[in-house]
Image (cartoon, rainbow, N blue to C red):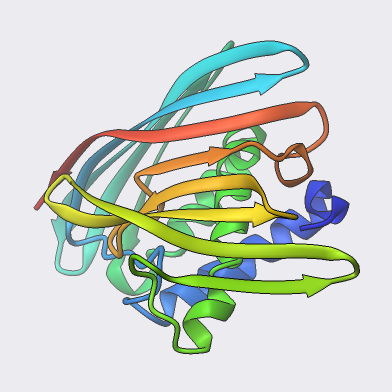
Length: 213
């Protein structure tokens, strides 16, 4: 997790790689089944240039016909507001994220760092590691130590979720409460400005509402 995480190009590359990888494995963190999701609403808090912005991101999915779904996105953060509606299919649901990100820079600035930190979990799943209580994984490169650990679990919205901590040089950079279902974790707390981007000090998302089919 070096300074390149603040680069828009690197974030976009990370986004594409993570979506492809997670879409191929439903059991990987971030797996997503559009048939199960009816409504989600995330609270957003962002500290940028000394100012705290609050808002929300909602997603509503309505079955339209066989293998087709209408998706409505509403986003607000501070003075930024954005809405988008489109139709997608189960087999092509990952394009839902590209439509969201590339239609509005505000939503991309919020969600892309979240998917970027999720990508850090990919080596763990590829090596067969299971994210459960007591798990710990460390790697050191270029004098920087990265640690991923799971100390606690809890149930939210009827799903078992795990508190995952990502530490940089033994200091917590990210905390996530994550279950297997859903495109995003239940809670994401990013405290490392190098991950979020220039001018941002912290980014916090929490799932407040979820309705499943």
